[in-house]
View 1 (cartoon, rainbow over the protein chains, first blue to last red):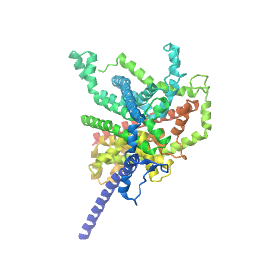
View 2: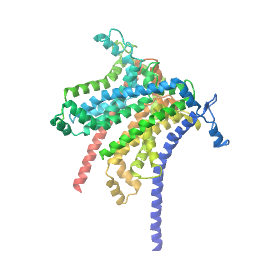
View 3: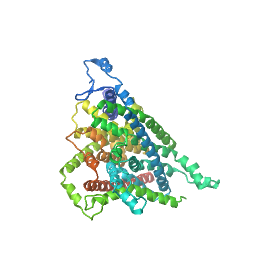
Length: 313
Length: 272
């Protein structure tokens, strides 16, 4: 009897240990993966941004050496690269110009995207899944190919210039490719689905009787739109703007394929610092500052998402 | 009553034209006889023929597919685990850090992710090639998978799992027999998302690759930098076609599965 009870207890015990072990592994495996391949690399970037460039492999100094100890190692680190970034106005200009390009193209994407999202939300219910699909589909096709498509359209002999000349809107080909305008077009085009989807989600949830009530109470359609529709879709607008602004800020592919030599963007500077100049410490310092600039919008974005989720529940 | 005004029709027409006309032009000019991609000189499929003969391109395509299959599969396993942890595991030490690390890669500029991973690989002395690209792609796409899967996990009825546990299933059996079939559509779309993200990626792959492994986006990027070429148009057309067919097929299948699942659930409610 006692032995039997012990066996049962043993079984329970083993099961409990098994469950705990399983729970531990379930958490530990993805956790360790992300620590090793997401967090640790950032610490390394931070460390190298404080190191000095050296003509060696790898091209920075100091290397971490257990024998010398941590204190000696830290003593070798300094903020020289950051001072360099402050002194050389190329970097200032690149950060400011990225900020300007990202802000402008976010505004443009909103202006282009809102009417589309609005039209989708008003379309007959049976069309909506198809329209959704049509917005999502470009997101699945290669980003690089979508940017490349514009290269042929915007060039001097391209489709757009042929059209402008044919229609008489322009008397000579316009130089659009390799200018900042082309970068705006590229960003608006590739990030448009990110703007449309959250706004559409907000508009679709909206109760139409609110607009009718506003109109019954004497609002014109325009002021009803301004006073009711826009505030109710605010969450979607904010989410869409962050989803465009944050990646646009560090964009590399669009400025290097569509922009000209005068289009300064920080993603491109980082790339060139790393691949052409082989200055790893400066590239790391550029990355650290870009990240510091983006921390504010990223935190604001996550707060907005949390608020939206809570309001849904 | 919703009203679709003239303004709505116009904005939808122009909006979708803006989204699709550039790609249609790209596809059209892949069938152009002339080497110039701006002047139409008659129908031809010769660029597809040349593409099939381009050894370097085919080699790159093979590397890309290999990387995408491995990374998306590992990312799906890790991402599903992470989603389960986020939605089901309650509180544990470092939970905030964990969810932060899941969401941060989604908004991280690619240049930063690429640079930091490269510095890690060099720091630990790992030779750059297919393995390092797979590790890099797995890391960022597992976060996308976990977001997709966790939104499905959060909406489904937990009492089903509890019923299985009450009926004597172990936690692993309950997961395999109840949870997994229910979240399967989300897991599949997570895999597809991870797969296409990996196929597309240029920046992170450029940082983490070595001379031994060139992926298709790297190849396309270096060709496209020099200008427009009909061969790249042909390649783009093939990629667009494959993705379009794949996405439409997947959405039809998952729609059918969803309808069937709803019916079964209703059936179960009625019979009980």
